[in-house]
Image (cartoon, rainbow, N blue to C red; front, side, top):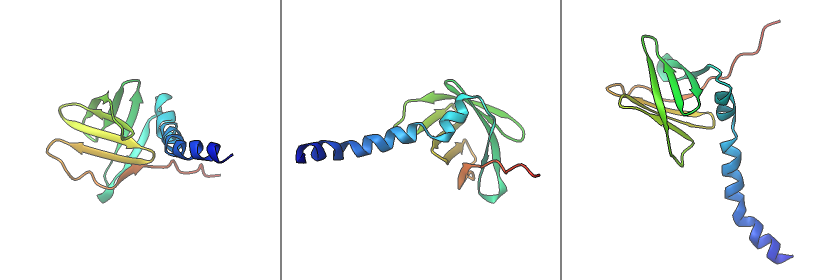
Length: 113
């Protein structure tokens, strides 16, 4: 019985990683839902994941980013921006604009009755 415990314990990090891989952003993104990302200083943007692309909808433009291999959640980029989604955490960096800070997926508000 001691042997089974020794084998199971190293598998715990793998189980945690698999759980993160099936998190809400990945599931919602697979359905092509428009998500909202809220950032510090009242900034935000729309986000839609479509297969191997992420579409970032800014106030005055749309960026199309391509998925790249990453050990840190879902990673997308092009020559203008980089986006990383890991559970509810969002890292977004746009060329010449480093003010996208404290970003996260914005939870939809409950419908009013």
